[in-house]
Image (tube, rainbow, N blue to C red; front, side, top):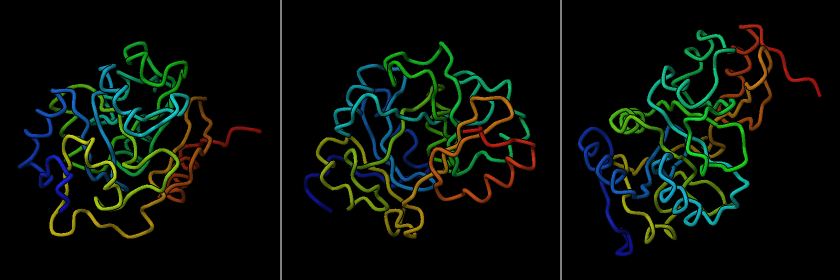
Length: 222
């Protein structure tokens, strides 16, 4: 374990209180999701969002997603009235990011000038519990510098350790995942009623397409 790392914690219920405390203190933390390692902070706090852009070295025209606790929380931040609830409940929680029109409740400094938002309800109890206790969304992005490969282990983003306030990991292997997870979540745009557009194939493309077609969704016409 590098001496450059600030704080390390075992993920799960034992560290939930620590994670909540750090986030309430406007910190940026790293944590395993249901695909790759992610960076998370408070989406509704502009100072936190700016810090996340800085850590990533990211162009503000490239949006962050948000992570929420449950499907019922999505409507607070994104417009989903046109989407069948059964479809959302089939896809989520899971390794899918849905893109919808954002509501006025979301921090305008998060992805400024972009009228959509990617929303994750991850199959990660720890990540969902953080959002639940905080009762607000987390800005979520991959734990790597912008335009560099995503990370499956903490060691792969060691260059970021000095600027991350807490690193959470699973035992015994710090969330070492199969290489197939590196592609991240499947991102699907559902902004148009009854239509879909695959933004990123991700890890569960076949399953996502299966249920989109089952519920009558058709691809957006070119």
